[in-house]
Length: 410
Image 1 (cartoon, rainbow, N blue to C red):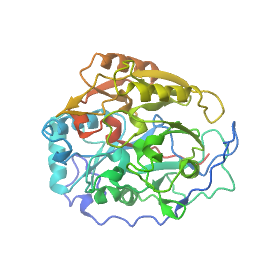
Image 2 (image 1 turned 30 degrees about the vertical axis):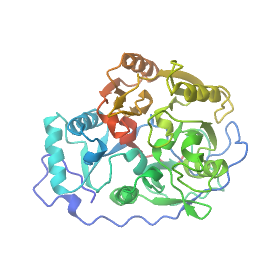
Image 3 (image 1 turned 90 degrees about the vertical axis):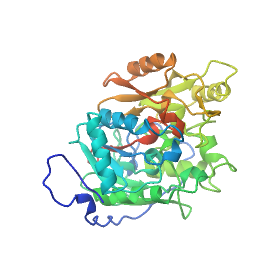
């Protein structure tokens, strides 16, 4: 199940075919009511928090794309684009790559070699998936405490682990839209088994909580971004029927260490997740948010993005200060087979070695890359051609999930 496969290894039965270790028994994360007015300033830390994406990674999780129907008529180039993603990410960290089985893994390895990928940092795991969108179905890692506050002695720390990591076991139901999700829903548990780290099911009001990684973005210090369209719509793609703002804020505070929620409105046109925030607004630093902007008043993205800009003008961070908001351009409309696609530069992925940014053969590519290069000065900003990739209804951030490096409680 959890093979580490490296070139030059002795000719033995691949480790991925050995029985996996049992998942570490761990109690649920039970979300408690969030304070109506989050405390500003230093205070005490939650038991767990989700680190910011730019924090050092121990690894990145990816799932090799295999579902041709996700890219009908355009699947041919997808494995090669994916190989380039693996090449760029593996330059600075381990890549934990999910494959369907031994034969599939060997096929993937051959393709990666042809694409010039150095295989030493690439680990193959036999974990069948329905789709490749690991941001939403994959493991959401949390670590103890907070970077700038002492731990809360009254908080339930859950089960500790020598690495300081645990997995918050959110449920996945294919965005409350598609019927194929049962294999994807097992990925967090299989990841916990592979790493022998605790998996804590996330429970609120007696129910396991559905939450996708693309529905949220954190600064790692107590503030989280989400959209009302994705999480609070009572009729369309309802993840957790009956949940309101206070319910989600309790989950954000108790499980992700983010008691300060900034709620945006609607997502971008063409997004079949119904409003994931990672296509429109992203933290690029503890106090800075990159927000997509569409100046063309006739474009269907113009009004919702302007409304989100207005919301951020009155938003506050966890310490009561205003975030700096940096505009990020939108590419021109991208359509295929008569359907508008969710093309957005906000779907970038921050790995140890680089910031990977989707590009669309658009004049705004250069502006977006330049903007993000000014914001991330500690690593190169690299464009990845995504015109074919976005036909699958997502790009780089949707395909990836970070695993923080080992930490100890503060």
